Image 1: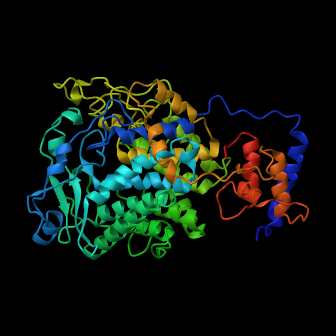
Image 2 (image 1 turned 90 degrees about the horizontal axis):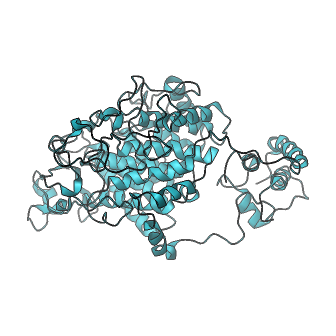
Image 3 (image 1 turned 135 degrees about the vertical axis):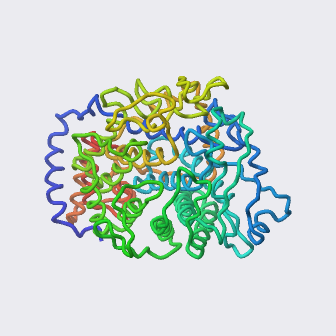
Length: 580
C-alpha cells in the first residue's frame, strides 16, 4: 500500500542522497530577514474576535479593556413571532427570551447570525485546510474558545421543538439604523435591541445554512477533544439545513448592510459538505464548470459572506482531491485572481478581506508547493497587507511597527462620550489582531469615519485566517512573538489561556511518546537521513525498514499514509523553507 509510486520517488531519492552528502558542510539556509511572521500574525488575529464579544463572560477575559455588555439581551423581545413559533421560543408567554452571547459584527454592535456563521465556518475551514496549524502557533485553546462562543450563541438563538425541528431563529439582534446612531462603548449602551425573527413563514435560508456550516465546521474542530459538544453542534446544523430547505425564503428584514440574494444553495452545499466530512450526510452532488454549479447557479465572484461557492470547492478539493474542484478553482483564479507583482485592490470597501479570500483560492491550488506561482502570489498580497506597501502600514492592527490608529470600532475607539466618528479621534485601545479594510486602488485614508478603510468585521478576520494559516504552513514564522506581544500589551490578559488550558487538560489526548513529525528513523532529530530512509522505503527498498512510530512520524502532511509528498516536505523543512 505504501510502496506504489516508485517512479515518483526516484528523483526525490536522488535529491535526498545528494543533500545527505552535503549536509555536513552546508549550514541551514535562514529565512529572509524581510519575511513576514505569519505565525505571529495568525495568533494575533484571534484577539479581534474577543474585541467583538457580546454578553457575559467577557470581563476578566482575554482582553483587559473589554467587559460584559448588552446583558439585557437576556430579556430580548419575542414580538413578531406567530403562535406556533412563539410557543416554542416563549413557553411561559412573558414576551421575553435570553439572547445574550455571540459576537458583534464589526465596528458596531449588531449581532448577525449570517456573519457569525461565516466567521466561525471560516476559522474552522482554516484549520481543516491546514491541520494542526493553530496548535503549531500555540493558540489552539484560543481558537476553541472563539468557536465555542460563536457556536453556543448560534445554538442558543435556534429554537427546536419537541421533534428536534427548528421552530424559529433569532436571525439578527439590534436594528442597524438605531445602533449606528450611538458612538459609545458597548459596556455602557442601553438602547432597545430589536430581534428580527426567522420562521417557517418568513425565513432566510442563506442565514440558516451559513449558521449550519459554522456549526458543522465547529463540530469538526471539536470532534476529537469534545465529541459530546461536537454531536450537539451537528444536531443543530442538520436541523437548520432541513429548515432552510423545507421553508426556503429570503427574508432580509433587519439585515440592512447584509441583504442576501435568493440563492442559498451555496451555503447549503457548504454545510452539507461539512456534514459529509463528519459522516453525517451524503456527498453534495455538484460538479462545477467555469463557475457554473448547475441550475442557473453560478459563482463568478469571490468567497464572501453572501457567496461561498469557492469555500465549498476549496473544502471539497481538500477532502477529495478531485480535479473537478481544482479545475473550478483554477477557472476562478484565472478570471479574478492575484499575482506576485501587483497588489489587487479593486474590491473597494473592505478590500483587505476580499484580497485574503482570493489568497485562499490561490493557496488551495498551491497545495504544499511553496515555490508555486499560486503560493508566491498569495505571499506577495499578504505581505502588502502586513506592511510592504507605500504607507508602510500593517493593516493588521498590532502587527509590525506601524498601523492605523483612527479605527472605526466603537469598543476600541469610544471617544469621550460626546464624540462621533466624524470627530476622527485616535483609538483609546490597540485592537490587536483587527484586520481593517485597508488600502485599495483609490488609496487609503486613516480616518475614523472612513469605514471602508478603517473598519474591521467578523468576515474580514475569517478571510484573513484562511490566507494567513496557509501561508504559515508553507513559509513558517515564529508564533512565540505573539506571546511576547501579549505579555507586554496592557490590552491583553496574557495568562487567560493558561488557566483555560489547565481546565481542559483532562480531555486532551496526550501525544504518543516518541513521535516527532519528520523523524522517520526515530533518532530524535529530523535530518536528511529521514528523507533518504522514507524515499528508499517508498521505492520498495527491502533494506529500508521503518518502525510503526517512524511511519507516524513520516506522515508529515497528515494524509492517510506516507507519500512522496512527505519526502518533499521533510527536505523543505531541512532547508528551513517550512515548519513541520
